[in-house]
Length: 152
Length: 152
Length: 152
Image (tube, rainbow over all chains, first blue to last red):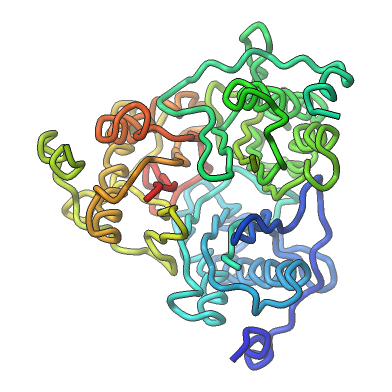
């Protein structure tokens, strides 16, 4: 089944590609790597999921934010590559969590994105290397930011 | 026009290559990628631009620091590659800002480096993927640190 | 001398491969790059080196933690590649330190890992590009986390 068909089967609708907030390209293909910039959780209405995990945002809401980042990455990929079916595998995610200094469950947060990609491409091709860490702050106080690479 | 000539036209002088502060190489070419280590804003006299954005450092000074990091990256590239004209494009920047936990304008800070590279190589080849995020702290309390990759 | 023999000569014993704490692969080979996920300092008994540098953890203990991360990375590499002798060089380390906001010696901390790799593979092949920076927090309050890439 194509990834596009699988998205439909999972009742997932991609948000519009996120507007750029600075001097960068959202995705760049170099050789067989489609590198993507740090993406943040933008909702279809253009608003963003903000706030600090461990403070005003709880773990479950942070996982939802990470999943939304995943959908935004897919929207960028479709916009840049033409079709998600050009993606051969997930290579890497670098997951950055906006959290309090005593927060310890960063991997569980970023799983919100990783599980989306795993469900789409499977345990092997949908899961790459990853770090999940806590930042001092993130642009616009977003809850999660994720950058990484697909193989195309 | 060559990048070296463009630098002269823009009245830009590269600082000396930064001294290394640990066990690493400042640049490493692997295949067609010239990876560069995290660079910090070293001035020609060897001093560094330090302090936390949102605290004792304002946005404009942080942008100047990011631009200085860009010049230091170029100095490393010239030292390692022989000529900046060997660089085919900017592939990636990972921009790290030393800022207070309530700071939100990380992309505007890192634009100080991105705009320098864009002005040198143009909107397409001078602009790659990027993240711009807030760290808990940076070595020596520098204001900005940036790592990334060029294609050569 | 093979790296496996050198490990024995240095009286180093690799810990068991670290258990995964989320949806990711510990190592992924893409082309000639063996990318590894963020590794943390797991001891042979499964416990982890935790705490914040500049607070309850001092510089020397943090360097020991970084060296332990290096051993855990080697354990992952041996588990995934079959032999450490398949590694041609160290390409990149991204060293993340769990520290107080006024800590400034991140490079000295991450040297604990970099010096291990340098001693194993030598000044040229054992030393790649690197950043060493301070995070807001790390999973499980570990003291150091390092991700990166080898060339195979």
